[in-house]
Length: 262
Image: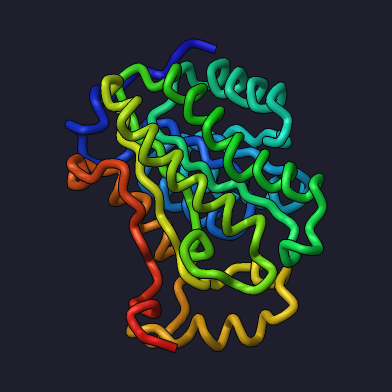
């Protein structure tokens, strides 16, 4: 398909009208919140999902309700051939890319001594390797510069129960953020990460101590849990001209919860 006309450098224009945004794992949770916020501001959206076809279809309809285009594609990001197909589809549909949000994440919640090698490889493949490969693919489509945002978590710095593989993968993703911020700067691509505290999404259902996590998550200075919308608002800001000089940073959105000693 013919490339969409460019609105010029993302660093010079206000708003996201007619920009092209790819959100990995964009059918639910934080990814869906980010995709919807960009669509609300006029951006065309692409997102991938892994298993839940119904959720993906519903998200696409919600995105298109804002009058923008939406590319929905099933793609397992632990498979490098699927990553290439995803970006080939974005290239064919839109001809370029302005924003990549590396949100897709997976992992096995077990302590280190119970974790198997296949669990480690699965987690690192999706949470770190895919983030790196998607960033490189995206940089080839960012013809006017652009923005890459990696979604990480406080488990990269704080030791959480049964979070060994995911926590270390998020720490690695934060290192990837810093390196790419330097290496992609010559292409006018800014790279940052957003780290959430306990975010109120369905992902908490995967933890056996969900009720305890929700209780902890509510102990913020704002008096409520962090939501997907809070993360989306931060991503939007980092992709705006107002954040031009924020590069290679990990922006913590936790409502001030980590300021208190527990």
